[in-house]
Amino acid sequence: MKLSTITSLLVVLPSASAFAPSKTSSAKLTVCEAHASRRSVLNKAGAALASFAAAGIATPAFAEVAAGNSLPDSAAQFKRLVNLRNDLPSVVKRLNNNADEIDKKEWDNLSDYLRRLYKGGEDMKNFSKTGIYDPEKKKKAEADYKLLQKLAQAGDSPIAKEDAAGLAGILKRIELTLEDFFELLRDVPQDI
Image (cartoon, rainbow, N blue to C red; front, side):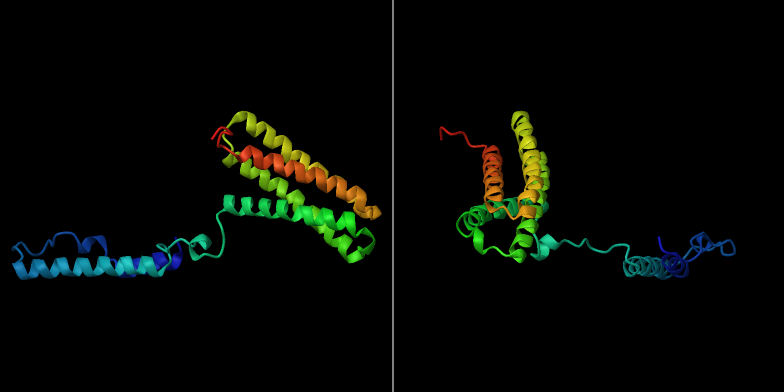
C-alpha cells in the first residue's frame, strides 16, 4: 500500500477510542443521537472507501482484447502461423520464377522472413502445448516445430550465397512441415 494511501486513511478514520463507549456518560443515547452516530460512522467508512478508490487500489483490469485492439495469445499465434503458411507459396514462386530479379534489399527481406518463420516455430511450440491434447500428436508437433526452426536456420546459408534455388527448396520443406502441423490440429475424424 502506498504511504499516501495510509496517511489519507489515518486522516479519514477516527481513532479506535472514538468507537469505544464513553466513560463519562452513563446515560443511554436517544434515538436521534444513536442515528447521528451511525450516520457519522457510515460517512467516515464511505470516505475511507473513496480514498481507497482514489489511491488506485481498486482499479479495473486493462484488457486489450476487450478493447478490440488485439487477439488472445493463442488466437494471435494461430493467425501468425496461418499467415506464414499462406505467404510461403508466393515466396517460393518468386524464388523459382524470378531469381535473377532479386536485389540486395529483397535478399535482406527474405532473411527477415526466415526470422519470422523461426518465430513461427515458437508459436507452434506454444500452440501445441495448449491446443493439442493427444500425446502422440504432441510428440509429432514438437518434432515439427524443431524441424521448422532448424530449416529456418539452414536458410541463412542460401541467403548469404544468394542461392534462390537452395532457399526455395528449404522453404518448400518448411511449407510441408507447416502443413503437417496443421494436420495435427485437426480433431475431426476423416470418416465424417
